[in-house]
Image (cartoon, rainbow, N blue to C red):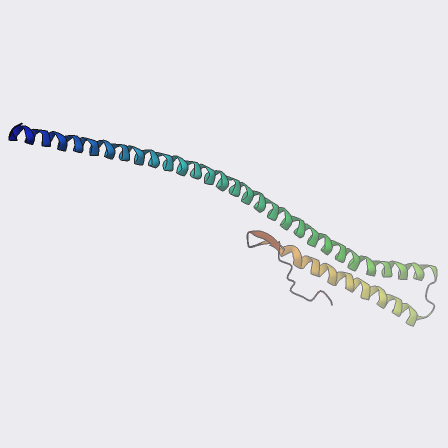
Length: 164
């Protein structure tokens, strides 16, 4: 074997070595592509799961907002109901006194002027009491829902003290 044959044999060995390295590199690149594809599939699956969770969260938020509106409405109705009960009581009490006093005056007319004046004063005081209650009710004409933290609340502020 001469020197040229030895060089050719060495080059053939080098070429084979390079081919083996290239084949190994190709297998590595193919394995990396496979890993990337698997990672992309996992990422897509996680995105789908996250979207499903977000959709569920949005639906839950809508239900929660609706529940909060319903609670606010019930609280507002309860407050109005309580006001109606209070004012009904505040008006009926003096009416009963007036009716009772007039009924007694009808059955047993006062003989002296002082007793008559006292009975009339009782009637007028109770009429005045009813007028004050009705005035307080009229102050609620401006009662409009006020926006507060995504809810509507009634503004129950009075311009005068309710205890008088």
